[in-house]
Image (cartoon, rainbow, N blue to C red):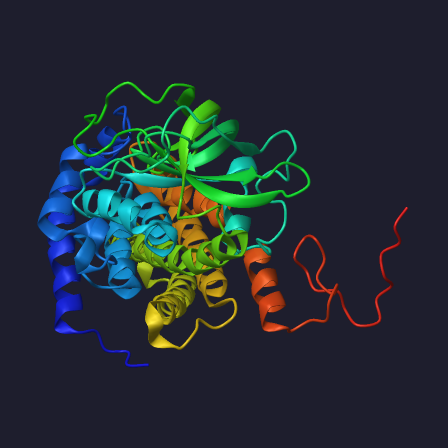
Length: 444
């Protein structure tokens, strides 16, 4: 692995940092999250048009920049520094890789250029709050994580034929046939505004139940402008979240028309593989974002302790404070290295990503952000607890990121399982390894 970044990668980082420092201060962040979309749409259009941010990891053939997960991770790190509220993770790290891996040529051509240009946004909807499991980060994704054909999941059935099933000439939806989705999903990132929903659902009934991915297009390029009335049967409600900079939504689908992602009748094994590969990219991106947030929180804390005077001297001169900050710095640098390595591995730095590399990097980054954010609140003293100070933004981001693709102990348990560190059944449901010689659980 060459640990040095290229000049192009440095330029991506510099340009993005300069723009975000001008347009995304703490006051701007607080104002943006209170808008209906939950982010600054003008800033997002500028990031997409000027920097090609959502298309960094997409091929140039589909309107992307032609870079990879490493460049996407660097962009996410800069976004994390300012706690940027945006659909970047949902669009570029979750939905776009799945469209690229599984979509038909017609679907890629119709959607990926619009996503890369910022004309559309997208997200991945997984029922039951099982996003981390679906991405194979906290458990195997070969089971019934999408509902298993039971209540609480999303079911897919073929729609009755009403005409020819051939695709339309303009590359849009098929003229007839298609699928219908019924169910609900909560905690969907940017689900209330995403123009394209990649929905995981069970198909085939009870006997041949399998999990596939479907496209629900809330807006088509050249067909319906953003903000147009939604798809019939689709109800999207923005949920109240601890971290307002990471908007989430609850989706209710009542016989919503959908299109199978890919061709043929769908391949459940291919879907599982694509989700697992996307999980590594998403974990690396989220880890880099957490590292960026922790870096800024630590830097602002260091500035504060140098200026805050107590007992006639800056509190940063006390050895106890210095030791705490030094420990945070070491943890942050280790997390940064792990995030970069995971992104490099996901981008083809190795023939295949090492088992659990994304989960381990994300676990280390989330742990570092949590420690830095907690110490930032403490070392800022009374002001750190106030709503007016930005320290609470980093603390809330740390708490909610662990709920999004964590928790940390399950990420590490899954990585250990993939690496074969423990024999079968030696990892408890809570994620802790069972010592050798411990009595086996007795089923009652």
